[in-house]
Figure 1 (cartoon, rainbow, N blue to C red):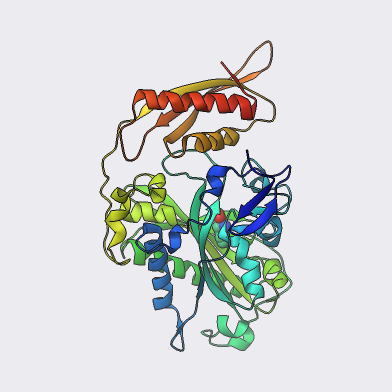
Figure 2 (figure 1 turned 180 degrees about the vertical axis):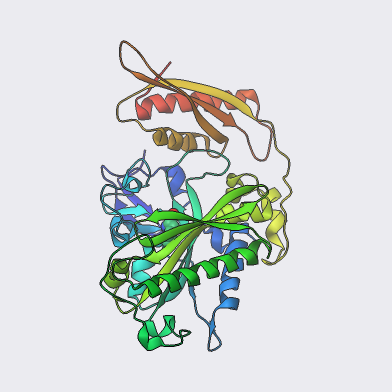
Length: 403
Ligand code: PHE
């Protein structure tokens, strides 16, 4: 039920066999929550921007330039190849990514802009924007969310400026790649970048959550950084992953025309930060157009202390659905269908049973759908109608057979 030509942010894209974006997703493109005055995601963006502008100043001007208006429509090449993501990497699968067609997609991360911004001559920048991923449905996952990317490059002169004998250091060598460095980087380069990156991000988290924040670094893997880490913070009794980062792959930096420099990059999720900082219990609330939610932020300044008071949780209704699945089925197809049919009425979907028929070999899935409106009480009748519509659409569009 998508037209042959998709009109997205004023440009036309012919659909083809790879197209898998849905009208529900398309309706989110261009909402621009992160640039909307009085929106909690805008506050988080401004708090982080303000930290960078306060902390990094060069001759009276901010070191980092900020981009918050880059189109979320990017090429597969920008989102994957430019970042050295292998051809067979899971993130490229149509079950994980929203493809517009065989050349374009909705960006899955703000890293998609790294190479092009470096190419344009920048060596310190932040990118804020909406990103899109096919995923499960629950209170912390939504197929659209927001990220902030940060990149900083250094020449040898800048990186070694505090070393007592800078002439004895060089950025590059032709050595071996190991856990602590890339083959082209000298150990000093890798270690100084690691130190600079980690102190920057620890400083940011302390600025947001308070000086006594407990944090820990966990080794990670990304195709476009090495070494790579995730930063976890201890918040309300549990460790929460906040961001991914690392020393940028030199091949990437070279391909962006900055081969005399080396640098670091990070990417963090704005919703997760906002949910922790403002006590927002459900990720769907960011998309609410009801005044109950937005009112609590509207007249605030981004640095004000804000704690969201839940308007009250309305009761939930649970309904199960079971069906035989066809061979080419993935659960994310069903989650997208649920979002398309129900809007945000379904707050959680769990695969609660998977069963293979011993004789026919057919596979059946049973999902539990939790219905809850954020702004009113749903009647059983309303829920049944939507549930019935989900059953009908699932058999029509996904070829499943309701049991
Ligand atoms: N793009 C990565 C993600 O979305 C995060 C990241 C950004 C990691 C920059 C390293 C460097 O998970």
